[in-house]
Image 1 (spheres, rainbow, N blue to C red):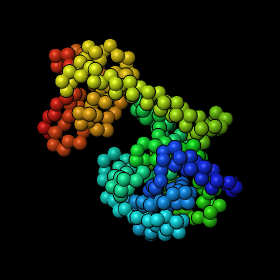
Image 2: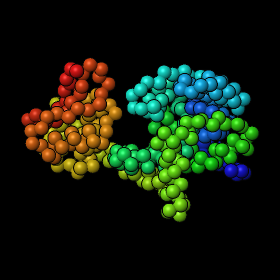
Image 3: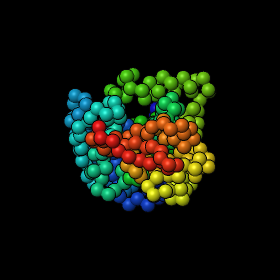
Image 4: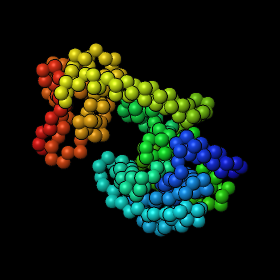
Length: 318
């Protein structure tokens, strides 16, 4: 796409983000692809920028790719460009494990600065579709926030085609990640098969509509989360939750109170199904046993249960 003004469009988006969030310096996550390369170019022209380049080591020649990206970042005016080498585990599948390792490395290297990520409107639309398909609840369908400290996403209203056009305007050659064309990855099939079909069937504008849906749901989610935060202390009994008080709450608030309580008790990576099972200890109680929830514990499991009209948490050794 040869679109004059693409760089100006990106500059406006990143400048608005900087003004809204009072950013004086920042890091940017750079893969070398068109989205992150265009973001780096614009960010470095606006604020002192440190480029953080993660080498996942999953593809032959990854060291060359990261070295090229580092040199591009310095040529674009970044004050520093660091290559972060990570070991990708297996938990959560290939995409999930790589994402976990990447975010951990970025968080460690950012030295207190926010990190700009090059997620676009197209990425937001794909995220909403994934959430819909997996039935993972409104929190997932609400998509990504523009700023979820320390992660900033100034391009969420910008189409992916604009970042490619910006690279062309600037004479930059982005890296083409072969994984982005590999149909074994769910996001690739959404990008290349599902979204184009939806655009054809529904007459266009689907990506933008999905992003608007995410924004609306995010506003509702944040309002309900705030209500849950105010409600939680009112129904605590010791370290547990009073089930009678929980049962009187609207379902959307009750489940958010349960989620917040679980997180404060050490739960991690909660799923919608786990929260609903804990909720059933309140709404469909018939003496059932505890519900296992995710946690960071290595040799024990975390459970939520019910005793004497109170939701409680306990651990069991594996």
